[in-house]
Length: 209
Image (cartoon, rainbow, N blue to C red; front, top):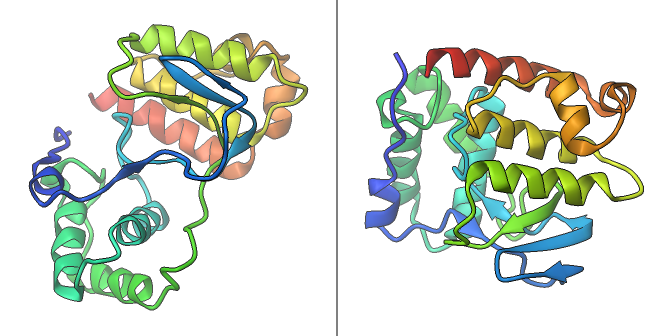
């Protein structure tokens, strides 16, 4: 059974889960989006798409990032937040997790250096809130801007994968190559094992929607 994501807890407690780049400057900026030709690691947009957290590793990253973006959280506040995120009916994760494993993840996150930004995917196109564009328009813009660059990165492929999924379409190599304006061989070349697994997980999740 698939659950709708419930952001009420995060919004009620005014928790930050999205933050645009702070020091990196966009190559192009319009009223609708910001484009970073070399990409930026400073953009955190948790839960921007309908894709759920599908692995323990991803769950740990999301919890670490939430605490990094909300450094004033107490240990008790963070535990409550982790329990909400890890509770399958809340709609954030696609799997159930035992209390003991969640305790382990919470402990590991609490031992991390919160002064250092969590490792983040490279982003080149960032849409502004309430930009008024449809998902299909965003998908088209992302493909055009990323595809015109001198090279594509695995994170570029991931960004388009998520947007295709968010548009409720099946992710295929052909569709990725068309949107990125590159050959299928190029897409195959930059896709790592993690991306291939994520592609399959997103397509499986689409069937369950």
